[in-house]
Image (cartoon, rainbow, N blue to C red; front, side, top):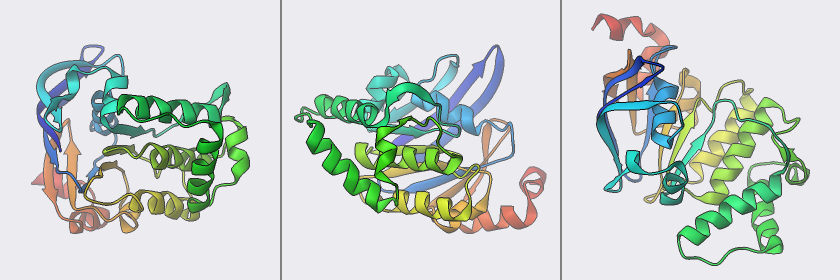
Length: 247
């Protein structure tokens, strides 16, 4: 379970998170919606351990462990995965080597044997087939020359290989056409189960037509302003955030 209590954080002296209280139980998918500048991406960065953000109050625990006290690689080894809004290109770093290195680092942390090149390729090809991804993407540099949709599918492929306990998807639907959106959603839905949780950050309700959340939270001005069921996303689509602001 991810449990956040009174989390406050700032960057360059400006407070962005102003007291976040949120719980994501094991096996549930929760969505966070909110206007630009409300703190959605900042929350994902703080939870994943990105540099530059100062925690000024509160706590965040994951399966009872102090998440904020861990290094980023320790959070990853514990089962946390972040899918970026804008995945970066890594020229000169092969996609296959990158993913195999990440997967084997996870396996070492769990005390499991590492996969050799052939074992990894067999596993990766099976996952790529499920995601309708061409195998030649493994031969390219990480995200180099990828379209927006390919970058997001590549993130979901990493998630499918690493099998995190909790995934944070930071506006994964950004820039996707409807076909790519469905493929990404199918990848997330394929992982749904009692041992997988997700925090889906999005501006738009359309993604939640394909990844139906257990709960929806509205983040405004650095705080959770309202929470509800999946119907809340439809209300926001119809009425905008003004109704929440007024309340």
